Image 1 (tube, rainbow, N blue to C red):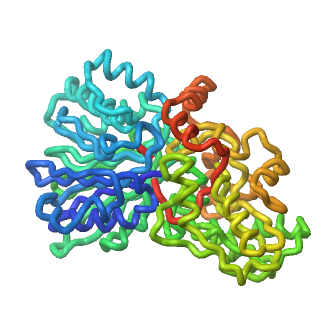
Image 2 (image 1 turned 90 degrees about the vertical axis):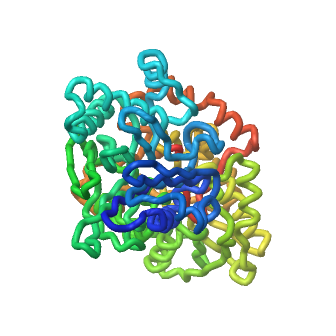
Image 3 (image 1 turned 60 degrees about the horizontal axis):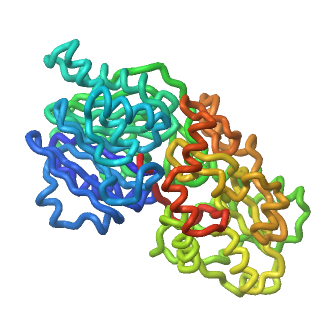
Length: 508
């Protein structure tokens, strides 16, 4: 999760455009927001905890001047929750580099030790994004020592190549580099999304933009060119020229959870429509629901992200579709609330049942996924309190059994309701009369139908198959025992929670 955005214009001040674009990416992160612009001589920065609309106002346009800039909306999966870890991050040498990052680095311990011991750098935060930035800066410096300063593009691309050879994990990155331009790159597996777009300005010149999702382009009249390739780096220099470099060999294995929950339904990621994928998820889930032979009076989605799936299930089964849960749209996404107690309190503020759609009826709730289980458990009870006779639950994704280490806040098995439980035991834990999960092979089919050139997806939270290095048993154990996880778990002992509601974002 996390949302990143960069705009390089030949004619326009970019603050307002970055602000609008970040609003379109707010579903990927609401813990903190940040923007930095570049005038050609100076950087202008502002970042703080909170939503985009709360961190920035109209007066900031007078301060955050410049025709090039980058922005970030943060959802913390690594590091802490305080304002010091809001992005962008900055190093003053070489050149002067600002960085925004979506993803998660898995060999941070090793890299932190090298940065401090070998390069004598001081790290101000516990963020993996700051580690990534310092590694990039070190490698660009190494390239300058070998090649000199005459060709910044050569040094930047060489630095990215060496960074990719040293860093492991998932990362989509946009940087702003003084005197050079905007540099973006994506990890060799392409786990987290990143796209590049173009528009023709009033002078007939090209402006460029990078974003986590292409929904951030249209509001500023950019047209998507393509997805950034795995292992690719793209530089937009200060003269408005685009340069591409395949830093290392890549193989596209995007995160399948993007299509389940993280991305907006109107996004296209790596050639795949999120909305169409969710419709196909409904088709396959419908078959299992029919095979279960349940007496169902109506199908009710858990708003908002389960609606496309629920609609397709209703179409395929012939069971009536009803909106039985009303969402308070002014409450943030429960999944990203810091601490289980705050998450649980937020659920009660967020959803309300419609008794007319519940009383005396057998209802099937459809949710996009079930992670911790707390939210769906409370919704089931809410429906019973509203008079439902029987409450069944279907999940549009398979059981989440393993930590996600690539930028989604599932760092410990202890938090997962499906950990070491059978379907029957999960059903009992959630208090539902029946529980149906999507099959993993069906979820993969639903995504792959959108782009049959993709041979593999990152499904690690479902199957435990981690595609990158440094994800050893000892690494996973360190996540289980981390201070942040301990703080989250002590906030509330309940072992479950589903991801519902608006959408949000990673430390990277």
